[in-house]
Length: 633
Image (cartoon, rainbow, N blue to C red; front, side, top):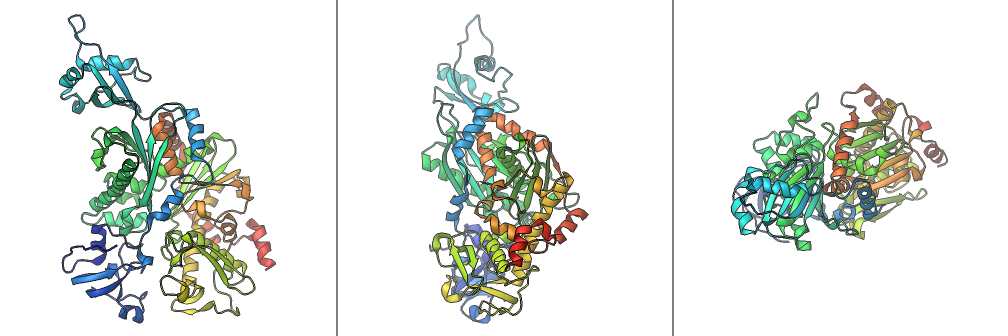
């Protein structure tokens, strides 16, 4: 799609793209480190710095890094496939993957009740006369008192009170009232006449990489489904940095916090618009929105300074946020719509994890479960109905393409499955959408490490073995590498390789996740074998091949039936909370019951991390079947 974008001389090309809403992969936040924001100068000139990731031939062909280029006049820029962000793949992980979301909803609503956070009532109010001349406000409260849950005092805010007298009389004392039912009961709107019982909520998961949303039906008619529409998109903040630390640092720049808040709110507004348009729903009928996200994302979404999250002793400004008007953060809804947030626990265990844990059912079972959400941060929760321990480890962006030479997010053309012939050492690959390869995403990285290990191409240190007679292993510009696809086979006209530097970054990521799990188990007095269930949540989690993840030492070696995949559990929990205030209160109880273990500067974690910097692990006894396979290789 061609676009003409105005710019000033000397303006940075990546910043121009950001302002125009044109997505270009820039996983390092524009610091010139990752080499991902490749573009091609088709016409005109740019002032550009050179970069090791761009060879002389590519540079002569006009290839540049957007973050290291500024405009000096009219210029035509082509964004190659590997630098684009394609949202189409996100729809695969909007809802649960191995369970029916409808069945989940029915089970939880049966337990907690279908009572949304905001209720809509039609009231016929007794007209005042000489014997009954109490105030209009008291008259509304009296009419509400007969409705379930409205016996307590209901606040009538000044904003709603203004003009109320004329509205009631013009309406013939028949009005429709929206009432916040969670916490302090408050009337958010009074509308003339009976507008019908139908009203709607929106659930939103604000992830570091993606934002997902669902339009929900709040009617209490038996048998009526909840989910009306779903949509998702990349969080527009990704142009400012791949992980939360990069964004916290950007927020400290001049106007940085404002920019980050504006772009994430614009992402949510885009999804709101798509959902309402798809179902023909009027914005005035959206009564409330429930959001869930990690602690940093919540600070940035609400426009709150996040810098103390990354500074010892790692104290967030807040982990719970009071209900506010949606317009206070810039959401494009009617003025009366209310915004609720699932509470978090600590700087690095947020409401997204609380939402998922509450939805997983692990707090209702006697057996001990391990809940994992693997992303740029690895959040982990261990426990059962009696106790919960939680922690977060900085896994890094490797599984989302960061720090990997040809790493990419899941998108059409991304290599997602890899097998290596143990005799010929030739690879077999599958890409998302069966397109020509343009890079390798997280699930493919797990596969390739496990397959290279099992085939003897790499050793347990992640180094290429000597003496392998194959054209696939060679010396590259960054050391030894394995060629997954030659240039003629790809959509980027370059060889797609896995280097020893890539392998080191992947091993560090898996070691951090496994070490975090080990520390939690040790603090709980348990071993991996004591787990009844390992619950893997998140969009990335549902695409993992468990067998390969065990071989590389990312997951513990347990029987396959003990693993459960939940997809976007954060969104699922926010959805149930929006239509069940009983579940919303349950999520708050889960947050308050978690004991957080801080892993930063934790000696126990560092010991476990170093032990896990081996394939699959330094202690082979923890992976007996994998070790047997390696010995029989």
